[in-house]
Amino acid sequence: MRIAVLVKQIPAFEDMRLVDGRLERIGVPLEMNPFCRRAVAKGVELGATTVITLGPPSAEEVLKEAITWGAKEGVLVTDPAFAGSDTLATARALAAAISLTGPYDLIIVGLNSVDADTGQVGPQIAELLGLPFLGGVREMELERVSETVSETYSGVTGEISARCERDDGFLRARTRLPAVISAAERLCDPCKVPARERDDCSGRIRRITAADLGEGPWGQEGSPTRVGDIRMLSVPRRGLLLSGPVREQVRTACDLLRESRLADGTVAPVVPAERETGSGAVVAVLGEPGRARITRELLGGAAGLAAKLGGSTALFTTEPAGEQGEWWADAVVGLDRIDSPWAFSEVMGTTSAMADMTPEDVAEGAAAWASEAAPWAILVPGTSWGRETAGRLAVRLGAGLTGDAVELEVADGRLVCWKAAFGGQLVAAVTSRSGIQMATVRSGVFPVPELRAGAVAPVTKVPIRSRNRVEVTGWVTDDDPSRLETARVVVGVGLGVDPTRYNELEPLLGPLGAELAGTRKVTDRGWLPRSRQVGITGRSIAPEVYVALGTSGRFNHMVAVRGARFVIAVNPDPRAEVFHAADVGIVADWAEAVPLLAEELGRSLRG
Image 1 (cartoon, one colour):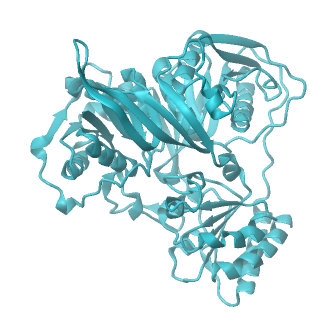
Image 2: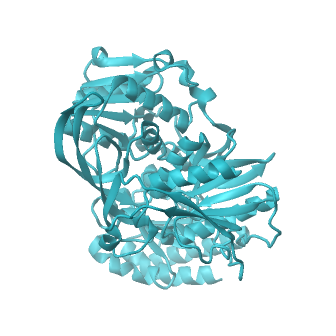
Image 3: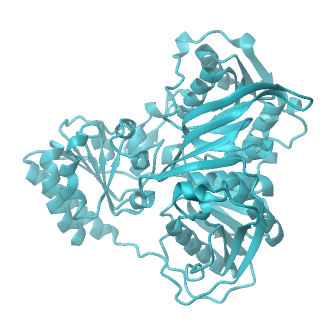
């Protein structure tokens, strides 16, 4: 079985620190992306593995590490011509390298890279190669694998059955080989070999240049997106460490919170204004089945953009027409499956259109509509479903796609997407030169707009015949991720809080309507669902108040709460790192502080 694993070299985030609210990168080494480590380990476990990376000559180090781990060979795609590649240009170069060095029976990528966090390259490669895709694979089995030799194909045939992580739980799905999958963080133990222990693998590493792959265009020339202004996200924390009786510490912390709220004021949610539907640009939203909240958020944001352009909004959806006009959709485009759907609606116990159409199907239908309608922009949810659908759609349209936008603007008639990078330490302004501009947008970026009472949107339909290449056999929902992303108060727990005592947090959670989150080590142990993980490889949140209990305060966790307006940390060790990333630190055992915080925070947030 021939396997290709795609890896990326990134800064070593574990060695980074927040110093006075800024990212300290001096002397930080480069390493293999954490998700790619799982991809390499799984590839080596399954068969003869070729590891491929696109990057400068220094990226050879990640190939040496992978070969030492057990990979058969490495391929370094390197050339100055590749400089400035965005995700689409990167996917095109890697797909060309796969075609040149293959064929492969299975292609494995990391779920995403923690420096850019787009999750787009895997689906885009699948689209370019015409292969099925399974994202966020947590568990997998190869079934009915056998060798096949014919005039058109020489390799193995078989199926993959997988348990795939999703934002609110997981799905079980299967597909036939060859295929592309992305490795979740917990798929297997990671490939990790210290530099001093790596073999001299230069004889097993092949270099490929732009000339080897063809005319291109490559690099910046082949990239529909451009990175413009960059802003450091400097969120200085007071770093005030308290001492004395715990009650007095808590009272002081909450007094400081009250003062901070008065100084900052409150920001009223932006609600789209009533307007006449213009004949200008159309701002489209790709609605994810079963996700009414984020669909409403995106339609509200689209309405705001359309108002600046004198245009209108359109919702592309797989769900029945209904109240979408009240959600600020000026037009609804429905994807209408014309073949017989799979019977797994019964397996899932639901009639959701999600059961009948895969992201590949939706992307194909959306591309057919967008090619005719030529919308000014398409906004897609920044979810696991949205990333695959948007990645495939961008390939079909040749569109510039910005992943995980945290702010959208209009400048000179173009869409400006502010995207977080390097763990959220900075945001970059990304624009697209393609006719259709695309962005995936995080939940909570836009408020849920008030309903536009009585509005009815006209409906058109786009027929689609499913390829039936990915079969979903089950779906389990164990959380609502929007609750964490939109919570006013979030309580984050580390290993210092015994999970058998989580019930003692209820006085703090219940009365305040707070949500519970955890560090990676907490979710690794299964103490909380992965959807509750806050950090570089989890979620970024922006509550009004974040309360950190029993956490060490490592960078890869605290960077994800930089958007919080006020951070309170509780730890019995006055030297704990977490206090440097907090506005105020309470030196105490969490169990003693929690009931006092519940009482005082209630007063501060009401005042």
